Length: 89
Image 1 (cartoon, helix red, strand yellow):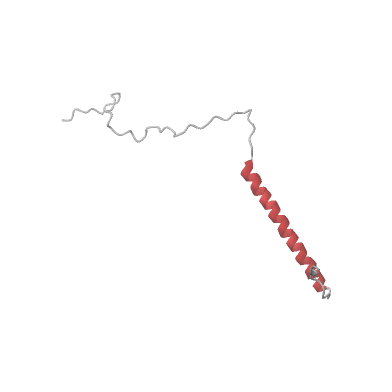
Image 2 (cartoon, one colour; image 1 turned 30 degrees about the vertical axis):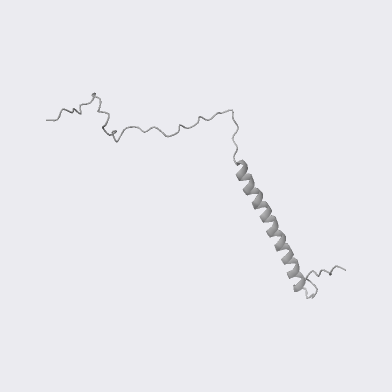
């Protein structure tokens, strides 16, 4: 017979595996939230993304506006709609 007893209340030997339903401790405890500390919804990365989107949107609108002006000019039957740059003298 085995000398090992699995009765509740008796400690298990140190080389025994942990019970599957034993609570696990987190690797790093969560920091408590301070109610007095203001929260930042975006942060630097969010502001950078917003700035890039605004600049990109402005460039797209500028290109579309130039294309619309050229299309309106050609639609009116004009022939000199493109911008002609004079060579430097």
